[in-house]
Amino acid sequence: MFAPELPLLRLRVTADADPGALARVLERFQNLNVLPRRIVAEFGTNDLLHIQVDVLGLTEERLTLIAAKIGQVPSILNTVWHRV
Image (cartoon, rainbow, N blue to C red; front, side, top):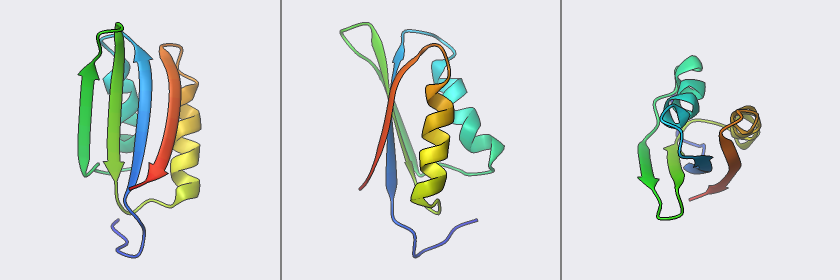
């Protein structure tokens, strides 16, 4: 559900070069029936996958929980979010 008073938030994830990492990040949003506004994934020169997910309609507390849950996945190295 979209709540216009909530800010645009950006989740940044760094993961090992694992083919399933992107799907595991996005499934957290799918499980909540949240459609990200924008998704960018880039395989870096350092053999890491960099994923950026922009979302509207989530509270900062909810995104903190999502980031923590994603961070528990073995191939995920780092998760951080901020307001855009």
